[in-house]
Image: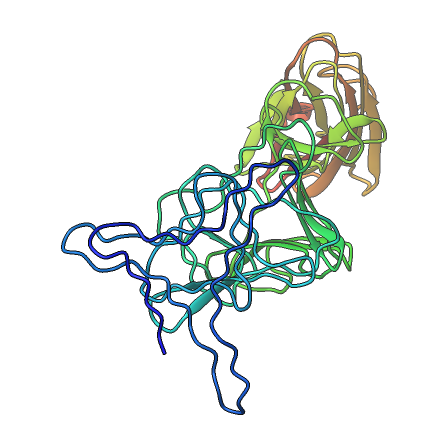
Length: 420
């Protein structure tokens, strides 16, 4: 039968072992034990410890006092079944033992649970949570802030940075990503980015839809591609820096666009040079030219100070008579370092008259005849080394003037020049 000990009224019923005050002794234990049951289908009795109901403040069940006495729960542990709160006022809470891994289970109020547990550790670890509000997710599909190893894309609907790291240490990378233990992506302490990958698309920049490639690095084939690798209808422009004034300090293989010279510049063989010749084209005829040297329109350019030029031209010319020679020359900046202009002009005997000028508007060694009214191609190869004065360098033409004869030069004549 049941045994009931009742204080009656509002008194306190105390079950207590005797106090001990003698040194080196222990107080007696106080045990509440239900009876053992040994039958095949028998159960041992429960030991309920409960506070009674009240119309005012409900009582509490207190285990232990404010001293340092500990409370040990054996068997299957401690269960609260009415959604109550368990408060641990001590400085530490332990789950599990040295021989039994612990798991902390959180219920969501329905049928779902969340587990906190750890795998086998090589040594003691400390996990410190930051002093900040938010959600930390290390695994799962629904997470608000940080998620590692998600099975679906994480959605960040905030206006904050999705990843915000402010590193204050003087060393150590901002980010290091590895694939099977090998680094593939690194952001260094100062922001330097390194990608380590062997692939035909190790680094690619395309438009939002991915239909147009602007830039691709193929580390397996040693190829850097600007634009598409196949022919298409979209032109992707690769534009180098534009600079005015003098050339910058050179590095072998460097290129840039010089806006003053209107040309691409290449640093090769230890010096800056024009990457390719520039072209000049005559677009209008000039006829009836007399015995004064006349500028050939369209066939001039600005010669830079202290710069060397190689110039090659083809002139479409004729004369009013075969006995009236065609003279070609040039004029340019004052005090050039040297002029060596070789001219080739067809004579009346269908042979080339060859002569060289070493001064502006020279008439030295000029031919005495021409092919007359038959249009011919006269040519020049000129090496011009300019001095300290910049200015226009212009090719010129005049008539010998025999019998009042004149000469003409026609549209389509052209020159190419480059520095050396």
